[in-house]
Length: 341
Image 1 (tube, rainbow, N blue to C red):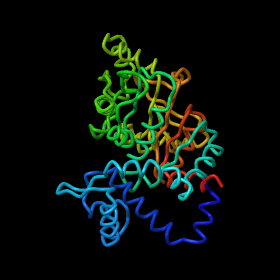
Image 2 (cartoon, rainbow, N blue to C red):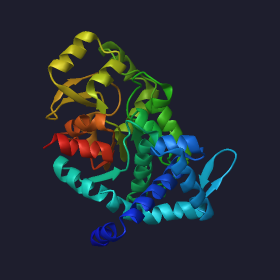
Image 3 (tube, rainbow, N blue to C red):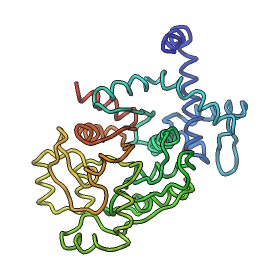
Image 4 (cartoon, rainbow, N blue to C red):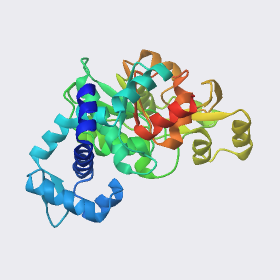
C-alpha cells in the first residue's frame, strides 16, 4: 500500500489532498454528530467555504444527511470511513508513527489517531473509539473493567458501545475521586460506560488522597471492600496519564509538596503515583483503589493520553509503568519522537 500511495502522490497530489480533506470532514461529522457547519469548520480547521463545498459533495453521494438539528453520517458514510481507515492511516503516516513509538517506548502495541487532544475534543473521542475497537478484538472474556478519571476518559465514555466480548461487564472506578469537574470523575465515567456498554457498575465513594486515619477507617467498610475486590481483580484497566504538577494542584496538594515534586523533577502521574522523566517514583499519595503492583495481574492495561502537552508525561510513565497498549494522537506521538532525539 505504501508504494501505491507514493505513486498516487506523484501523479495525483491534488486528488489525495481533496480525498484527505473530505475524509476529515466526514470523519468529524461521524464523531461529533449532530453538528452544524460553523462548528464543523472550527473542529476541522477549515474555512466555512471549504466545509460548505465538502458537505454538498458528501450529501450528494449519500454519505451524510443534513437536518435542522445538524449533520449526521449515513450508514454508507460510516461504512466508508471504516473501509478507508487503514488507507488514511498510511497517508497520514500514522502506521509509521505507531511503529516508531512502539520501539521508542518499548510498548507491546501502539495506536495513533489523527489530531491533537490539546486543541479538539474529537481527537479524544477518536482515541476512545480506538479503545472500544480494541476491546472488541480481545479473545478473552471481559468480566470487570476498571477506569480512571480525567477529560480523556470522559471523552472515551461518550463513544462507548456494547461490547462483543463478555456479557454484562462490570465497570468500576480504579480509585477514589480527585476533585474537579463531576463529569471527569472515575465514578461518573464508570456509570456512563456501563450504560452505553449495557453492562453493570459499582461505585467507590472515597476521596483521593486520604489521610492515614481516614484510610484505615474506610478500608474496613463492607461496601468499599466489595468494590475494592472487583478493582483489584479487573480484567481490563483503562487509564489516563496526567501531567504531574497539574494533577498535584487539582488534588489541592499543599504547596510544600508541590515544590518538592518540582524539585524532584516529577513529570507524570498515574494511579496516585508521581514519576520523574526516567520513570522513577518520586511521590505517592494515599489512595484507596488500584495500585501499581495490582497491574501485574491485569490481562490488558490500556493507557490513553494525547496532545502535545502530554508527550513528556506519556514517555515518563511508560519508562516503568505496565501498559499492553498505548492509545495516543498524532500530535503527542510526533512530540515524543522530537523530544527523544
